[in-house]
Length: 395
Ligand code: ADP
Image 1: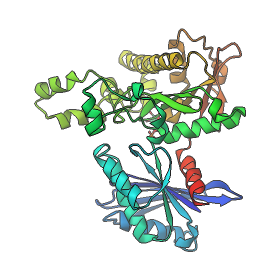
Image 2 (image 1 turned 90 degrees about the vertical axis):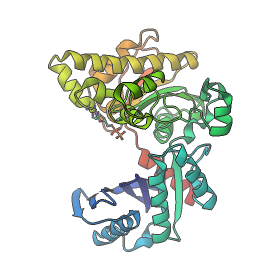
Image 3 (image 1 turned 90 degrees about the horizontal axis):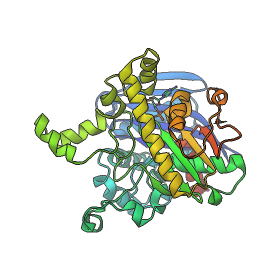
């Protein structure tokens, strides 16, 4: 079995995969939260939901308790049944591939803490806790940044003093790479074309959102930047703004730069702009009631994505296999997909409105035959991607 872990500073999301004839099958998933506060664990196994109020003072205690529940629920006989643990790590700096976590890799992830102070520390404490709990088990790291390490300098450098890059690593990294890799490989399998021959524009629209431009199977550009704050309007993040707004609002609100940056991360985007919710479902519900500001929010969101699609189509010189929508909004909202496609005016896209509203399990083709290129909604599966990467490095 392989355990996939996505750990934050006070939570651990996990999914357990059984490997049958080299094929991973998800058998259990769960979430430990409020670690260090009080502690709450949810596990879903065999269609049943289990909940535990359990004090978990730190990640070690959380992991001990999670593994104990695996045994009590008879998912595993003992810890030895878990052959490897794969970690989702947001920032891997210049690491281009998934890796076995040894001392050197651990140090590299540690070195990335200054680049991703909100994300990497949670992963590091979880890795340390697993090292103590399961010292013999191989630990693997998959990074959200790796997929974008193929961007060229012209794309990943900012027009700031070059020294900021040389001395302080100020550059575009890009994120959601695990999802983009999954979608690229999935699409290659779906249409039976080698990954290396695929040109795709992929819109990962979840609570965090970005678009990636994939040429010959490799990322050549993406909308997120040095941090996940850049690019599109998101659930609570602003996306691109004029950086001068920060100093202006520092003065206007009498707050410091950190507080304003926190507002840009947590109180902006759909939530701050709509004054309704960070959840697109609630905004669409208001649109349906005729709320004009909700309509403005949806229009702004859709135009923003459409503009990047056109930009990336230009980067691909119009040679595009497919436009793909994924993640919470991209997978589920026919309304948002329609609004975005309606705003892509110069690429000859033709949406099939009947297909667009259909329910589906895995993927859905939503373009008409006369569309210049295909449009799909595909369900992403980051945990499965991490599991596969973990298998590749442990078998
Ligand atoms: P995360 O980045 O947290 O993994 P997800 O990819 O799960 O996010 O996306 C979560 C978001 O997807 C929700 O905040 C919600 O706005 C949106 N979403 C989910 N289902 C729908 C739907 N049917 N219509 C519109 N938006 C949806």
